[in-house]
Length: 106
Length: 106
Image (cartoon, rainbow over all chains, first blue to last red; front, side, top):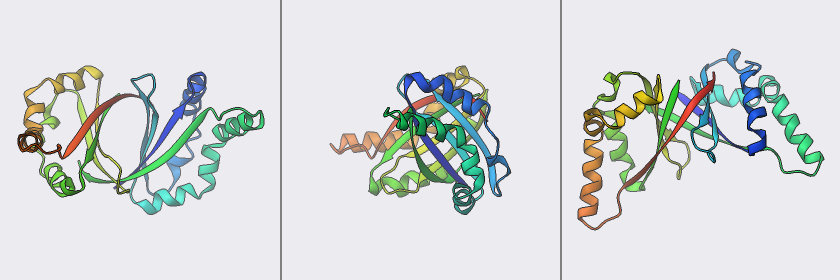
């Protein structure tokens, strides 16, 4: 099994909006081949990253999703917020980085 | 639902031993009240941390585990490796830090 974690640092003022986006997410990812489940994790520390943890049957399934229409659809509102901030010459309200993992034990 | 992640940085020479420890783990945690499941994640980058991800019904259940006999039992061999390195005046072969999260969406 394969796990991808998107580590997202949010500005303080964007956290409410960020949580709203995930609370009303498109669920486009759920229909992707090889998708198992996902968890949106809010850190119990003020400074910590949010984690979007998705479980897949293989790296290939994850990779296909990142190149899919569903990926663009699923991130549409967040991407728009980032574009808008940039257009106004502001810092993007969030930064993200993917790290991928193999599940070696349970 | 509540998630605890133990971020573990391993020295290069300890990785094989570390994976063996988790591949033959005691499963003492599995019987704890409120424990749901766990995943041991190996990073797909040379420098990245291993992640031990455990899912619980509540923060209280996680907290009870950290104070239990099962916690000591489950970490016995790893703790012994760290003690041995220290006794020999060497760097510990791994460092760990817990970060906890609430699951806000799935």
